[in-house]
Length: 218
Picture (cartoon, rainbow, N blue to C red):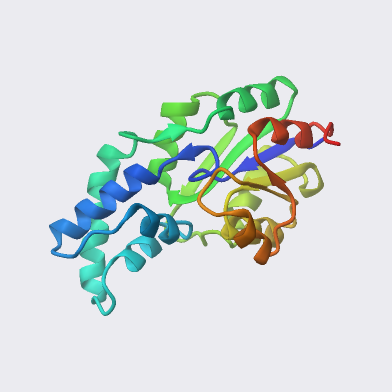
């Protein structure tokens, strides 16, 4: 049994892609650039908002123009980050069951910290012991810094924690932090891609996470 379950946010506990796409396309349009499709944005996410914007703008755009798109995106997303976002089916009951069994829960995301805090309160109020997003001066995932901070704050040793995410960045984060990784298959990356990056433990339903964390999996 693990004593701490550390979750990624986008593509793992929340389906945030429609709101991300809308804010990306609003910013691109406002700055005079062509918009992106749902599938393009899905491929672009995972390494933080700045990298999302860098991937979304046309090739050859200047740093100052990327800064402008990023600024417009941030202003729009702060207001619209919960318009279409929804929790994946079964996530809230999973968190409730974990906590009822004495397991601590945390979120570590590459999403901007303001978004992480707002969305945790909106969808999972009181269900996480610790939540953190991307902040200035802190290396983002796959660096293990924020995962290590969660372990320190919650007083949990690495051998009693597990990381749960949907992407190659999440798998690399878990490896870098010295944690086992559960890769979910309802998010933004498919099994074939994740296997090619080294992931090996997969779940298709949130209830399977409960079994693994509580040590009841077959």
